[in-house]
Image (cartoon, rainbow, N blue to C red; front, side):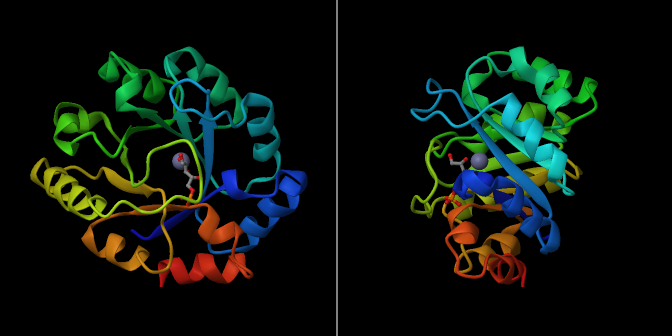
Length: 214
Ligand code: DX5
Ligand code: ZN
C-alpha cells in the first residue's frame, strides 16, 4: 500500500479549515493528528476541541498519534472526537496489550508507535493485535526534523516479522519524510508515510502529496 498521511502539525492553524479542504481535494489518504502533552514529549500541541473541529471538515480518516503519558485515559474521548486510528507509544504504555485491546473494543484501528531507540522486536508479542506499527524516524515532539537513517533497517526488519507471522499489519513511518526518501521507504515495506513540513512548506502541497506516492 502507498498511503500518505499529511500531518496537520505543520499546517497554518489560522486557516485550518482551508488546509483540510486542500487535503480533501488532494491524493492524501489519511489526516495525521499529533497530540502532545508536554510530558511524554517536550512540546504541547492541541487536544480534543481542535480534533472535533478537524473532523467536521475532514473527508479522510483521522490518524491520531498520541504522544502523551497514560493515553488510556483518553481513548473514549478521542473516539467521540472522531479518531479512526489511534497510535500509542510503546514507551508510554505499561500494559500495551490492554491498551491496544481497549482501542479496538471502541471500534478504532490500533497502532503502536516506536521511538527511534526502541527495537522493533519489542512488539513481536502484540503484533497480531496491531492494525499498524508506527516507526518514528525522528525523536517525537517537533515537525521539521532530519530523518534518522537507521529507520530503513527497522522498516525492513518489521516487514519481515509481519510476513513471518502471516499478518496484514501496516507499517507507518513518521518524521523527516520527503520526496527523496519516500520511494525507498515504500519499497522496503512501509504502507503509510506521514508528511508534515514536506507538504505544508511546499509551494504546491497537492503536487507534493502526489509526488510522495509516485
Ligand atoms: C513529530 C510528529 C510528526 C511531525 C512530522 O513528533 O509525530 O507527525 O508532524 O513532521 P515532519 O514531517 O515535518 O517531520
Ligand atoms: Zn506524528
